[in-house]
Length: 439
Ligand SMILES: [Zn+2]
Image 1 (cartoon, protein in one colour):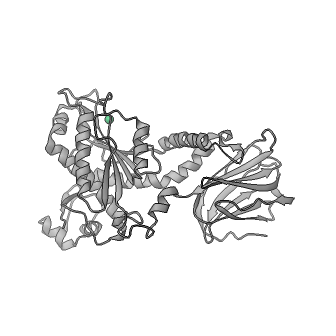
Image 2 (cartoon, helix red, strand yellow; image 1 turned 30 degrees about the vertical axis):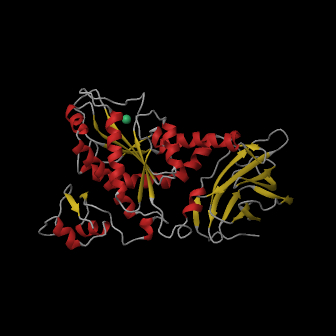
Image 3 (tube, helix red, strand yellow; image 1 turned 90 degrees about the horizontal axis):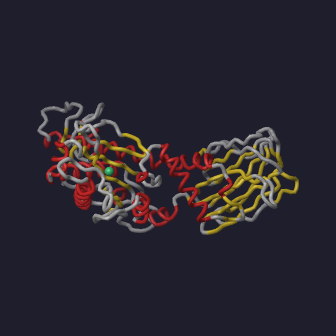
């Protein structure tokens, strides 16, 4: 049967090239296993084959196209299992075989080829897992709390314990000031409707980088913000910097996490994931992470705006970096270098409670602004569009913004925005800091 191509693509996964693309191969059959909510599908092949895997909607299904292959005359269909409700096959005139897996819910997939093993031939393995895991089940809109869930913001004070971080000439230590700013940030977020801050560390304790993201995951954090202060040998270096995870970093971490998962899950159905080429795995994982990375960038821009209204910025753009602590690809994450402790003036400012409070409020403003604009489904913010942030916020005008856009963004009237800033008209300039009234 020839299957239609007209359906909408929801996810395109990169085609995986193998060395002998022209060799035709027979697909002998398909086998399935399910374990712990995951399903593994294995296509038995007479030789290596290219494949292309993508997902289609309505009904949800995964399509695997294998060019230059034929289906065996006695093709062995596996049973439906776990996430796979039905297996269908088709052949196209250009010698592309198509395998369709009907799935009951949206799934994530990983696919890779395995060379012949002890008593098995070439195989194409497709691993399926629920698209958003546990979180989606608990947090599906309307499924649980009619009030909507609070957004969990993981606040990570950098360093701690035996790791003091940077220090200034006058004795200010990074691990101490960032803890103070983190606590102030938690207090600021606590005051906002729909937010629940959690401190990744709340004492002068050493916490490994890996453990930090694990704690955030365990709390089902919606956002991860790591707070630091910089040092540089040149004491004139100054200003704050906001970072998000770079894709390079994501790839490395993705590879590492995948490796770990492979070892944990080890085997479903007798084939080890360890056989696969790691770059294939990272390409696929990169795709799944893009959403979290782009959310990170948007949130980081909002934070940068807030921070820029209270302190000098070293870089006026969000920076990308591969910090280990940021490598939690399923949680949008931002790292803030609040200032340079190696700069005596910034060291003095960072120790002052007034400046700490301003910074904390600015970071909070950025996070709050981001989530009011992008409320996740099922969240309190999404389910209560009438709610506005509490307390005055500040907005630093960026290029191309208009007053009415800003008013809309903060869910207030244009008239109120004008009057609370004592503006004579609706003209604003880039960098101008506006007070956003509340309540
Ligand atoms: Zn640091």
